[in-house]
Length: 222
Length: 222
Image (cartoon, rainbow over all chains, first blue to last red; front, side):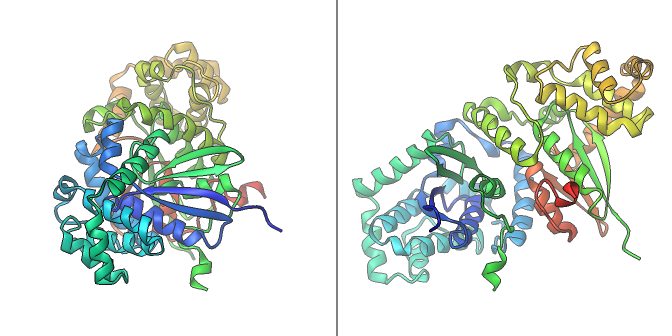
């Protein structure tokens, strides 16, 4: 008998392109490594505000972000495209989208992965809106949710239950020390390790004693 | 016959612990990949100022830095130890040390790798000063430089030649878009790719079409 799977929490926001990279890598490795992946939809805006982090006030960082994401997208085999008006996307935020993702997690957890991915596909691959109700519904339907279910979930995003859940998850990320997203929290041997960024997955493998085979593990192609 | 080696420039400062990680990885891979590594001693303080980047004003980032460097040091097999008073180290800076490294590069380039490493060993492994003349001389001697040569180089660090060289290299990093260190600039097929951070080495391998075998490639242990 093997040992029990280690719990990994992934805190993410569909506004964050690096969250997408981390998400896809862990979705791939969850079937290879001895882990139990728990997706934790969170609000990037809340984390940046709470930590006092203003990462995009340095023009050269923004310039680098564009080229880095293009290269990383190729390397990770994630169809990333930098949007035309990035500052507009940041300004509009992701509160409604992440409340919808949270509601999905509460009511239809089996749809969580696909709904999250379709929202990233809109914002970070096809440069489409993710703030309007019809945008969110379109992502949910593309993910395979019925129009009826999607509308019912959308109605729930302004309930205290959903708002509180997103707030609590965001606060949990802050308590783990987050100043951005994604973060991974690995629960091992009674210890918690918080790793920040999509570029700590090889380090995560090292911590877990698992094998790192790059962002696209060969088993997936087999 | 194989193709010509690709030129890689590594811009680094011994004040920067992530520069140390990037430096050791590239020192290892320069004998494995088809690359020609050019070390470019630069001034981190100049780059942060020029780019308007103030990375350590976020308390949680500083807290994360400590745990990240400890884990990364183990993973990279670099004997990293977080210093007791990090803010003091940042305040004191690395102008004299990096001028000495620059002078070494100009006059005794064969000593550059070892001198750089010994300065990192002082600042980031043994929590020792790197700003005083005797500290710099001690690092140079530990690197295998004669006391006489070390003193002669130290006398040159206030010459316009050395000061200008460090300024020019730092400006070159800024022109490549640096907002921190290390950066790697890969020259390939008439294109230049700038990668920021010690965590872009697998991406670098991907760009070069070379094999990534982790931060400690097995060939080193063979």
